[in-house]
Amino acid sequence: MVIILRSNLSRLEIEGLVSEIEHLGVNARITEGTGQTIIGLVGDTTKIDRNKWQANPLVERVMIIQEPFKRANRRFKAEDTIIDVCGKKIGGKALTLIAGPCSVETEEQIVAIAREVKKLGATALRGGAFKPRTSPYSFQGLELEGLKFLKIARQETGLPIVTEIMSTDMIDTFADDVDIIQVGARNMQNFDLLKQLGKINKPILLKRGLAATIEEWIMSAEYIMAGGNDNVILCERGIRTVENYTRNTLDISAVPVVKKLSHLPIILDPSHAAGLNWMVDPLSKAAIAVGADGLIIEVHNNPAQALCDGQQSITPAEFGELIDKLRVIAPVVGREI
Ligand code: PEP
Ligand code: MN
Image (tube, rainbow, N blue to C red; front, top):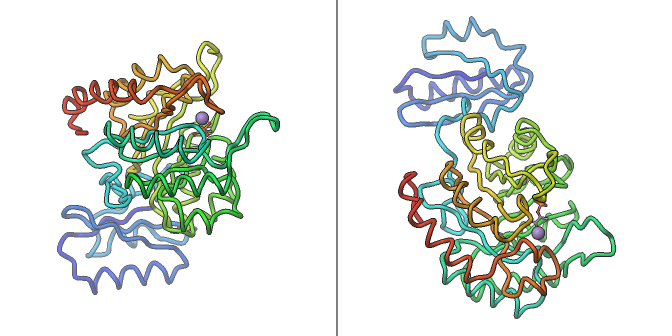
């Protein structure tokens, strides 16, 4: 339920309403938009008498939210959420361009790629240290050593670092060391992990599950937000369909759907969606044209020798050419690079 307040109420009047609501055992969250203050009610709202609140002279309107997600709901907060990462904004006019290898392999590799993508326009560096691999015999990542190398790359370039968390055991370390914590597709419904991530304040990049509906995916964001962490960035990375030419099917329509349903930023991952390096260029262009807030792209300085996902990795030179094309598309859809 959402209570839209009349304009120009005093702080004291708003706080009075909030305490009255919380007295009923329901959580009240204030959102101050341009010219409108909204109180979002989360919890067991069956105790709230809608008619009584509608009759309150301080209240403009009471709205019932049908969707199961509340905090992530666009009706709960009309304005787009803009997330600050080391002074850079995600979800604002400027596009977020995250680039880097699937996995951190050596210090030299991650530092060299970081330098190149930074020069070409990347706004953050990706690199997996803890890798969720389908086979237990595949490279599992450098783990803590990988994290150390990522921190060196950040120090060398100033780029914020994005890396995947796989276990709740690592939350304290990630909260200290990582700028954007990635929850991978395979962990989208690891509710214990999501709940713990709700208790910290770091931005979370939440990938869509392999076969998750948009509603299930936003409900996972809701898990994080219910704990008090509103810094969630959604990431569409392709879903399983009957099509097997590509690794997954990029659900481009997820962008307008998410923008309609939620105020959270959404970025696209063309690399894991297609699984093919030559498709990263057209899918990235489509992503920006359709209104995505940015991209996360696998870039490797030697894709043929990559320890993970080389087939879908582009080179820094190809990344540079792509960014040049995106610089042309971005202003057409009101964005900038
Ligand atoms: C990754 O980003 O390297 C990754 C494993 O992604 P996903 O969880 O989308 O498969
Ligand atoms: Mn990968």
